[in-house]
Image (cartoon, rainbow, N blue to C red):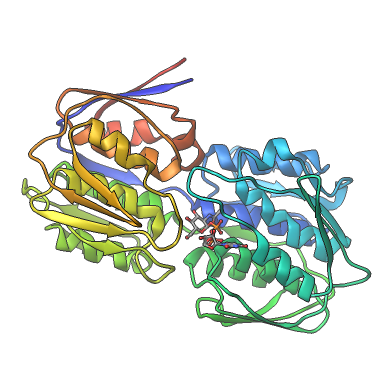
Length: 420
Ligand code: UD1
């Protein structure tokens, strides 16, 4: 297994470009199953999760074509299987996103049940309940979700018990081809949900209210192909901004969207960063100052994203003062804490809150990545630590960060990948 070796202590300084958003690319790729016409997707990030989704489409008989600019054309008319096997689902839970489209267009779907994962149990009951209310017959058996519907799904009024991002996306895709109107109350407002809605609209779907907590979808009989460019990745953007702040450095991130990062930028300003932004870029400068510790609480968008809390925990470990970080979206999302304490952080977990007293410096150590965002936080910890940090199990990071060591090298970090 590859490892990342980091010689910490360098101040980051430079410019990088942000890739397309993983969490919007994945549902958009699943949405291509809703039409018999080709869909061209631009600005796809080069990530392991994207390869897994391409592989999943491939094993159903769909043959995505990648051009020289790495745009992908997906023509699902050759589909011959409606099943997402466990081997793929276990490496990427977002595989559940094919459930709604397959059911809506082909009246059948079989998707392996995603198991527990490093950040909690993460069930898919809300996806299943909503599709049942739309008329699907769903059995959960032999580790699979087996769904069927006679004719088309039926639009209905849904009240979601919890805000679920992929749940909202699955229902929105299914409802696009249902008979009549579907209303999703307590829908996720995440920008990635909006991006998927915009792509579906470009395919001919009738959707309103995306970006608010009530989305209505008037089902149509057919969707067409389109060309769609995936929005920039706000979590990748935030991760590099935090890395620069933690190292007392400076960074300009380009091809991004400051308007969807407000909660994160506010916390970075509280940490002492000077931030200037244009329409598609953000510049952060610490002027050599040590960051101040911040306190925050994660919640669905537009509140502070759960996918950024581990990175802020890393910043707090070397900040001036004390900060507390409360996780309200997922249980058990503090796996990085034990690794950071092995690097000399003064850190403890009580319930769903992690308390950190900033120390002057961390010490490099061999650490192990446990999930995608936890891996990013360990890299930030490695960048601020004295001497060498070795991050193991970095396949987690390759799932969600495109060429992370190359981008960090561009910013002046001493980081290299050591093949297994
Ligand atoms: C998506 C993102 C992930 C992000 C998360 C929260 C993708 C591919 N992944 O994950 O990066 O961390 O949103 O912003 O977009 N829940 C249930 N039953 C369900 C569905 C969810 O109880 O049927 C619970 C989950 O266990 C969790 C909460 O709802 O506690 C939110 O999860 P959800 O928004 O569904 O996360 P994902 O869509 O899996």
